Every structure is written in structure tokens, then in C-alpha cells.
Amino acid sequence: MAEEYFNYINGKWSRASSGKTYENIDPANGDVLGLFPLSGPEEVDRAVEAASRSSAKWRKLPAPKRAEILFRAAEIMVQRKEELARRMTMEMGKVLKEARGDVQEGIDMVYYMAGEGRRLFGDTTPSELPNKFAMSMRVPIGVVAAITPWNFPLAIPTWKVMPALVAGNTVVFKPSPFTPESAYHVVKILEEAGLPPGVLNLIYGEGSALGVPLVEDPRVTLISFTGSVKVGNEVAQRASRLGKRYSLEMGGKNAIIVMEDADLDLAVEGIIWSAFGTSGQRCTAASRILIQRSILGRLTERVVGAAERLRLGHGLLPTTDVGPVINQAAVDKILGYLKIGVEEGAKVLTGGYKPTEGEMGKGYFIKPTVFGDVKPHMRIAQEEIFGPVTDLIAFDTLEEAVKINNDTPYGLVTSIFTRDTNKAFRAMEDITTGIVYVNAGTIGAEVHLPFGGTRGTGNGHREAGQAALDVFTEWKTVYVDYSGRLQKAQMGD
Ligand code: NAD
Image 1: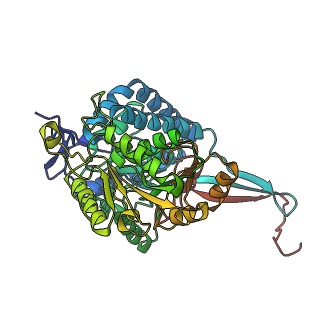
Image 2 (image 1 turned 90 degrees about the vertical axis):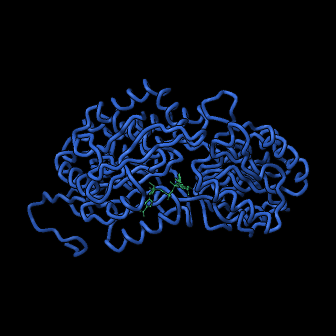
Image 3 (image 1 turned 45 degrees about the horizontal axis):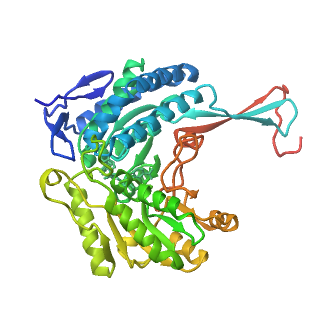
């Protein structure tokens, strides 16, 4: 019998009032890993109420004290890293090495944000008037709805929950229904670390059944969303109608540009890791490889060969390079794009199908796929496929590559492989994505730098680093006049 898990509302673990549950499934073999509540608006209401009631006390707790709880949580995460990673591989599918990376990114973020408890700097600046003091300080926003996807089941929740908490906000956390157990561990660890009841609440269930009432609840003042453009735009419309703050981190159509002078061994390694790591289910996955025409044949051969050598399997097996995709809907979507690609005139150079025999048939596996003869305006080169599929596109000059790179509805990551410093700097200047790598793949964000994208990838905010604090706090400006008379700014006296 699978273990049953509960919502966490006001410091108590409880079932949904409907009594209904759903199964958390291992995408590699269909095993049932746990039962989770199918909650509805009643649980949303209770969770928001708890967050709202605990807000006044939590925001008054000095930030260094809030941070002590985060430091303790980080210590617990370090001790449990291996268990967290293994359970993540089982519910999400990514190979164990990557799951460990996901947990490590979470640990890094908890420590980083705990450190913020003794910073959260504001400014002091001279006033334009004598005997007057001027400063600005960060203050919490209130109740945060943290809505997260399944592809980084531990790291992304920490990217939202930790800065929100250290800054003095309370949180209602609604994870993806496809990775509920990792969300449980994050919350359980914070509970064990001493987080007071009500400050962080966790509700499980289907996206829109919870997401809509959560976003619309007037007590929720900020929505921090990571997920697809479609849902993100819905969240944005609802939130903006109600005058709420919201930050959106959405999809990508990221490219690796390979110049003819590049170290091709390095480039091939970067391409394979970026295109097929996490089965291509990263917002930062490289789904377009732009190759200078003079090396097109050589590089194509090497990328196809390396993709063919990748071994599919359960992510816990040491022999596995690429795990399954998340669910049947993902399989259908990816197979749909494979068909579209062929209809558009692209050529499947390797992969292009779902294996059905033996163990493979039990899981949501897709063979790593490389499309050749792709033109920049094909749908497969413009739309996010979110699977182990990458497109090879030829170009002649750096200017053309940069133009192709910039010309999609998304703007998250670009990488360029070149040994020519002038070209690297020109690319850094002209590429319009939020993140640029030189001589590295499109994957590899570090938690102390801003993370996010331009155009349809987001709405201008950044997660991680100091930039995250701009999402989870607002500024209060304070003037203190100790002149003993009414000094009027800009009035000349
Ligand atoms: P999704 O949009 O389907 O779901 C994201 C979250 O929104 C889930 O928790 C879901 O339950 C919830 N949701 C669904 N309907 C809702 C509604 N009507 N109102 C409010 N919430 C609702 O995305 P997904 O499939 O979980 O994740 C994959 C997507 O996430 C990809 O597009 C990927 O690029 C993107 N992503 C972006 C980043 C980034 O930082 N830019 C990082 C990771 C993933």
C-alpha cells in the first residue's frame, strides 16, 4: 500500500476535505509512489487564512532570526541529500546525478538566502536639506503564492520559498501535481527546522482547481509563478485585473551557437548535455544548435553519434544517461512535434520515436532525437517542445547566427562556442537573452546570480541572487527631519 501524504496548513498535516487522493507515479515504470490529497477551494481558503494570520508576527521577527531557521533547514537538507535525490529521481525521472544537482541547487539557495537575513540591505543617502536623514529599506509584501513546475521539484520551490520567508513574507506553496513528494520534503524540513505554524502552507491538487482561487484570493498579494507560457499568461491576466504583484518565469527556445573556430570536442559535450540532460525538460535546454556552415557536416556527424550512444532507462540505474519524460501528455506533445517537424521538411537524423519493447514500454521514454535541415522559422525551431529533441540549423556569419538566435518568442539562454575573443564579446553584446554562456552549454545557473529571461520567457523579473529580493520585497523610503522646523524639499528654503 502506497504511503499517504497530507496538506500542511497552519502547522498541521491534514487530508483534503473531499477525502479524495491521487497517485504519484514513477514515470519510468508506472509504480505508485504515494497518495496525495486532491484539494479544492476550501483548502486554498484555509491555507491563505493561515498565511495571512501568521503574517504580522513573522514579519516582526528580526530577519537574522528568520534566517536561523533557514540555516537549520539547509543543514538538514545536506544530511538528507541522497534520500531526497533518490526520491526525486523516482517521482520525476531525471537521472540520479542530476537529481543530486537539483537538491544541491536547493541547498545552495537555502544557505544563500539564510545569509540574506544579515544583509537585506537598504540605502542611506545624503538629503538635499540640512539636518535631515534619508534612507530606504526593504519590507515584506505579505502573503506569497508560490506556484511551481515539476522539472526542478526541489530547487525551484527553494528559489521562491526561501527568499519569500527570509524577507518576512508568509507563503502558500502549490507545487506541480506531478512532483508532490519533493515539495513534501521541503516543507517537512522547514517544519523540523522550527518554522512557526502558518508561515508556510502546502496544498496539493490539480493546477487550475487550486491555482485559480489562490491567485484570485484578495489576501494573496504576490504570485511567484514558474511554468508554461500558457498558464503564466492566465495567471498574469487574473493577477493584473486584481492589481496584484506577480513574477513569471516561463519557457525557453534556447540555442547553442557553434563557430567554425570552436573546440568541437567541447562543443559536442556541451550540446549533448544541454539538449538531452533531464530528457530535454529544462527551461534552459538547448533545443536549437546553430552551426557555422563550414563545420556543419563534421559537427552533425558527431552530435548524431553522441546522441545515439545515450542509454535510456530508469534514472536510478548507473547505466542510464537519459530518463523518461514526465507523463503521457508530455509523450503526446513531443510525438506531435516530431510529426510536425517532418511535415515541415526537417529530417530526423536519429531518434524520433517512443520505444515500446520491454522495460521501455512501461515508461514515458522518448529516444533522443536530432532534427537536421531545420529552418529558423519552422514551428519546431520556434516553439518549446520540452523533450529530448534538438534542431540543427546552419548559418554563415555570426551576425546571422545572432539574428536567428534572437528571433523567437522566448529569451532565456544562449551559449556560444568560439575561441575568438572578439566574436565572443560581440555575441555577448548582441544576444538578447537573459543569460549568455561562452564555451559552456546552456545549463549551469548558479544561485547567487540573477536568473530569468527576456521577451515571452518572463515579465522582467529575475529569480535568484540579489535580484530575487526585488520580487519578494518592496521599498519603503524614510525621511527623518531633525531640524525642528518644516523644511520643504524643492521649495528653496
Ligand atoms: P505548467 O504551466 O503546466 O504548470 C506550472 C504550475 O502551474 C503547476 O504547479 C500547475 O499545477 C500550475 N497551474 C496549472 N494551471 C493553473 C492555473 N490555471 N492557475 C494557476 N496555476 C496553475 O508548467 P509545467 O508543465 O509544470 O512546467 C514546464 C514549464 O515550466 C516549461 O514551459 C518550462 O520552460 C517552464 N519552466 C520555466 C523555468 C524558468 O525559470 N524560466 C524553470 C522551469 C520550468
